[in-house]
Length: 114
Image (cartoon, rainbow, N blue to C red; front, side, top):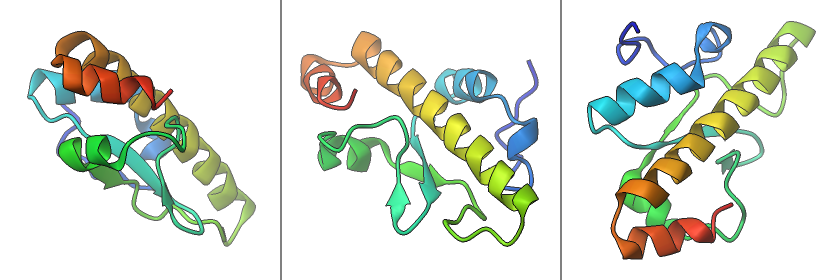
């Protein structure tokens, strides 16, 4: 599996990314973070509104560059939809990983996120 950590996470590259493979690389290198997209505000697809901010702050997040709630074209709109699906899948993988591999405090926090 190629290491994709050096490739920017952006709207231009998102259709070529695999959230499962990217997550495996990040976890292997201890680089756990959530993935966000820009809409009216920055959101974290796949996490409920009840997800504690402490959890996101502890692990951090990376925003998919170029995402927007005002796409300039149909193609950009399609890429934004792909970005949302990518982020949702990636974030769910992070939650499962944290539930299995972190201490009870973190596991308790993750239960409020799904």
